[in-house]
Image (tube, rainbow over all chains, first blue to last red; front, side, top):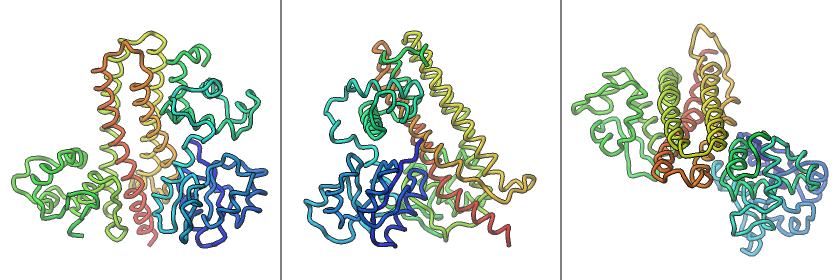
Length: 190
Length: 235
């Protein structure tokens, strides 16, 4: 299974190193950047693919103003009290007292959660999601799917999250079976 | 270590506990007994008596029972000793054998019953998916036995263990096991009778839960024990 790519935005060195050790040391996440503020984050996001950002919750105003984040989920790490309104801006929150296992669960949930703009109560796949699923079943990579459908790799990742959420199936092999059983693809094409 | 209190559970295990009481409270622990090759009957034996009779570490037995009952239980490093490693490896090998020779073929038999009600196309794609899944698991077991379990094999004379082969496959196996359940619930043709689907699902969920416990034991018990063992050989 692909490891999700994590950027950490945290001015406190010990907290940043602790998060990096827990998440990077697990088999789930790969730390692709460790920065101290949103200016450095913007620079990082220009050339680096990121699936989830873990950021000091105290930076919530700067994060809100950071356009480069787009649809990337942000997990806020609380080290002091901030108002409820600010915590609601995050995909989810942890605190400096959260256990390592719980932090990994929180981050994993944030990565897997369907993106807001595509979230629908219906579990029917949209036409675009079906297009992406067919290409996943045929063995295309995210980059190849993006190029084939003329969309960004971030959008492909968003569609894939929605597909996993709606079908309940995570593995490529399982999604391929799903595509065949639901007549989206002929088994001869595999 | 005389007593383990399992957080979030009503169970409190100690070496003085009667074996009958233990099994009566948690019958699923029978699989721990069989994987350790502990023989019945027990009469009125305590855990300590039984372990002494069969030559097992009572501390390790309590750890394995605790990890079986409570998936979030983690043994304390101070409770681990390098000498426990061969017993843990024996236990894990027995688990591998149980999955490969019992659980996976049993699920396959359930699947074949289901496939009798499916069209050719569904039958082929599902059969291929399940075959790939079982091969993946069995190959993974073999890899673990060669690259990790072999540290205690003096003939292999290994001085390291490659744990990188554990983590990603465990997540993959868990994902694929869940995928089987999702496909059975959501996508199989309507012609497949509900009773067959339910029988398959019960088995797949039991397999998933057992594999998760197995994975926890490898990550939180085997791994620190191998590290202790290799360190003890350096001295």
